[in-house]
Length: 176
Image (tube, rainbow, N blue to C red; front, side):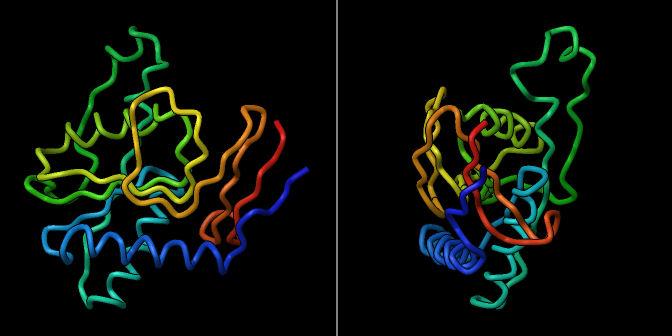
């Protein structure tokens, strides 16, 4: 049984508020790049970039990273076979990176994303933007920009739906 906790309009408002916070924290958009964690993090980053274009009339580079090869739950034998190659088509050296994801839970995906970003170049700084912070951290990771805090039970799942992949916008909580 799914329960909608955020509708499309509320989601749009949260992203707009996050966009304003990103502008304020970075004192504008100079040297700013957005990196979304595939899949929904990329679409959220693209939406934030569109908001930045509308508000500041600037095209901020948007890239995507796949963190699957950086996961700490892979066996060492699998990690040794992987090549950590270039994933972005722009340079992030000395840039202010905003890493974007849909749901922050244990923090392990973000840790993997940070490793992936470090393989791409030396940034000036990295901020974390998440649409939903649901708690239950296993690592000392804290988002800089949060769309909505939604405390959850361990037996619940947060499902972010986006029109780009799910044909609708919204956020539901479901029992596992």
